Image (cartoon, rainbow, N blue to C red):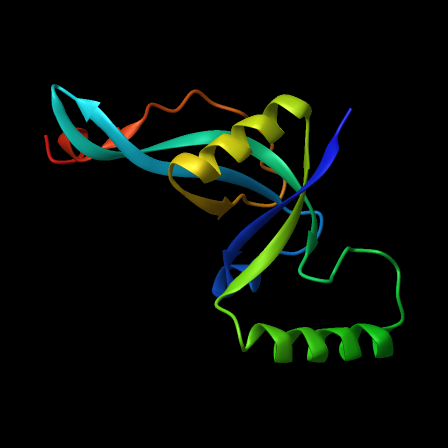
Length: 131
C-alpha cells in the first residue's frame, strides 16, 4: 500500500510538474571512490507518481476556484524559493527518500508522458564522465 509523502523542490521545477506526472528522484552525496572523497549522484527512486504540486492536489474543482488558488499560491511562493510535491510512495521508498534528504541533496527529473519503465542506473561520478 502507498503512503503520501512530501518533497521540497525548487519553485522553478514545480512549473514543469502537474498531478499525475511521473518523476525520478536522485540524490547527490559525498562518497569515497578509489580512496578519494567526491560527489556522486544516484537515482534512488524511479517512476514515482506525483499526487499534487503545492496546493494543487489534482482534485476536481471549478476553473474559477483553480485560478484563485493558483494566484494565492503564486503570491505565497514569491516569498520562497521552494515548492512542494506530494508523492505516492510505498513504505520502503518513503524510507529511502527520508534517508536521502538527511545525507545529500535531492533532485527530481520529470519523465516523458507514458514512460513508466524502471532501469538499472549506475551511480554517476566525474571520474566516469571525463574518461
